[in-house]
Length: 160
Image 1 (cartoon, helix red, strand yellow):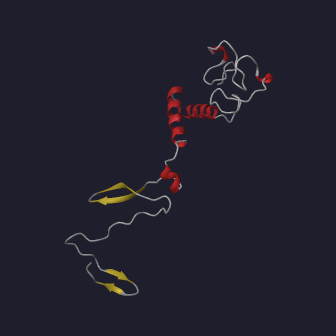
Image 2 (spheres, one colour):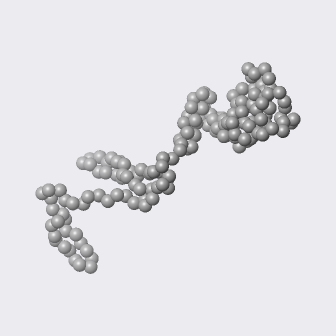
Image 3 (cartoon, one colour):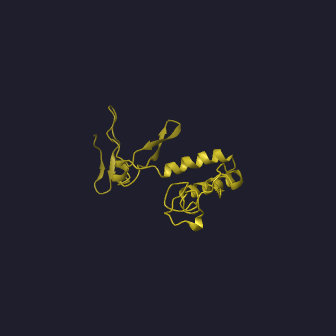
C-alpha cells in the first residue's frame, strides 16, 4: 500500500502524518505530478524514477513481503525482517577474492563413515575448477596397503 500524499509504503492517505502533498515524480512539495517538469526522484529509494514505478526496489521488496505473508502468515514486521535478511544476502557485495575467482566459494559435503554412524563433513571445493582436493593416501604407521590390481599389469603386491 502506497500513500498518495507522501508516496511512502505502509499506510494510506487517510493515515498519513504529512500535511502537504509531495509530487509523485520528484518528491518535492508544492505541485502535482502532472505539472512536474523536474528530474524524477523516488522518495522511497532515492533513485531516478517516480515513486509510482513498479521497478522501484522498495516497491518490489514490499510486494515480496506481502506475497510471503499471504502464503506463510505472520505479522507484517516479522515477515519484513525475514525478507529483508534474504534480500540483503542476495545483494551483498562480493569480496575481492570472490570476484577474482568468478563467484562465491561453494561447500560440498561428503559422507564419512565412522564405526556405526554416518556423518556429513564439509569438503573444500574450488569454484573455478570444481574438483575436490585430493586426500593423503599414505598408509598409517604399522599398516600395509592392500594389493592393487591393474588390469594391464596384473596384481602388484608392493608395500608402500
